[in-house]
Length: 564
Image (cartoon, rainbow, N blue to C red; front, side, top):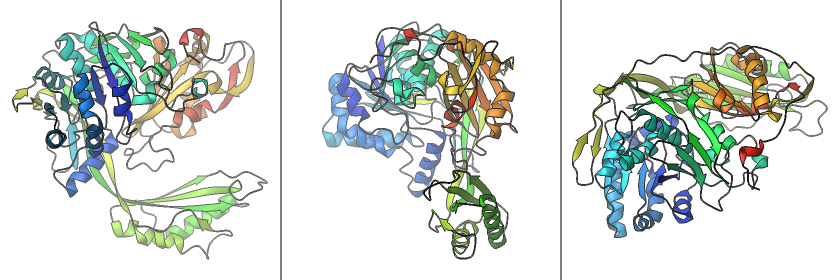
C-alpha cells in the first residue's frame, strides 16, 4: 500500500498539522489542499496587487518548519497551494531550500489557466497524471494549481502502481480516497453530527491517512493517539460532502458513488472497497471568478414589542435614503417572549446592499443607516459601525474540451512533460433523480428531532448547495428513503420550496442526497445568507421536530467501531 496523509483541508486550516502528521507516524506522501472557489478569488485579488503572488503564502511558512523532516523521512509532499501561480510557489520553495541548506527537488504542474479577458480568473480542474509525472521525475515536493481535490491522492497512487488511463476502477477507488481526505479532519470527526459520541467529544480531531492499495481499495485511518475517530459514519459523512448524483465527474474517471462499500477494519480503520469507474467526460470543468460589484451590511437590533412594525419602519427609512436598487432585508426572529434580558428579547434586522457603484454601497449606505439612531424605532441600536464597501466575487462554472488544455508537468530539472488527455471518454448524462414514496411510519410514532435518527452533512458548490442525510440503521433508512421527499424537504426547510431540488438515493451508504439549485445565489462570495456556504443546513434539518417511527433503533450501530 501507499500511505497518503493530509495536513490541510482549506486555506487557513490548522497551522501545525504538517508537523503533527510528520511526527505522528509512518507516511509515504503528505498532501495539502488549500483551494476552494472562494480561495481562488482571494488569490486572484492578491495577484492583482502583486504579480509574483497568487499562491497560498501560509504553506511556505508551514513548509519551513518541516521540510527537513520530510526529506529525512522520505515523505514526499503534494499540494495545490500553487493556486494561480504554481511556478511562483515552486521558485519560492527552491529559494527556501537554499536558505535552509536542504536539497529538495521541486516539480510543478501548470496549464489550468484559461485565458478569459473578461474574468478575474478562470481555471480548469486538471487531473492527476501531471502530479504522477512529477513524482516519477524524482520530485520531493509537487506543487499544482487548480487540480481536482482528489487528484492530490490519485497522482501519488498512479506513480506508485503505474496505473494507466484504462485502470478506471483503480482510479475511481483512489478518487474516493482523495475525496475522503481532502477536507482534512472532517473525515476523522470534525463537523460530525454525533460529535458528542466521539472519544474526545470532538475536541481536537487528528488528520486522516488513506492507505491506498494496488486494486484501488483503501483503508481510512489516522495516527495513533490523535483525537476524533475514524468510523463508518465519519467516513459516510465526508463521502456525502459537496457531491451531486451517484456519478462523481472527474477529469480522469467518473466515479460511481453508488458502488462504494464501507466496512470496519479495526479501531479507527474503515475499509473502502468495491468502487467502480467509467470513462471521464470529454470536457473539463472551469471555475470562473469575476468581480460582481461592491457590498456592505448593517444590522439593527429590534428589542421587545412590535418587531415586525419596527423592521418595516427601518426598511422604509433606508429605502428612502439610498433607493431600493440592490437592497436586501433579512429579519432574524431571535427574540423570545417575556425575556428577562435584552439579548433574549431582541431580533436582528440585517440590511445588505450590493451594487456596482462603490460610493453608493459604501459610506453613503452605512452612514444613512447610522443617521437613523435617534430618528427611528424605540430602542434603536446597531451592531455594526459605519464602514466602506468591499468588492465581492461571482463564481460560475464552465467547461472546455480536455484536448484544449495544455496540461504540463515541469520536472525538477526543468524538463516539461506534456500530459495527453484521455483517449477514452464518454458523454455525461444526468443521473436519474428519485422521488421517494412520501410514506409515514406504519407503526407507532413519537415526536422528536429528526437528528435523533439521522446524521447530515451539507456544503456549497458555486451557487448550489448539497445536503446529504444518512440513517444510522437499516430500519431507519427504509423509513427515511420513503419519507424524506423533495416536497417534505420543502416543508421542513421552506427556503428550498421555490428552488429546483434534485434528489438521489445512495443505498450502500443508507443515504439520500439533495442538490438545491441556486440556494447560494451567485456563490459564496456574493451570498448574503446567514449561512453563506450552507454548512449548517444539515444541522437545521436535523433540528426539526417531526413524527419519528417509535420502533426503530437509535444510537450508533454496534459495528461502527467508535473506540472510547
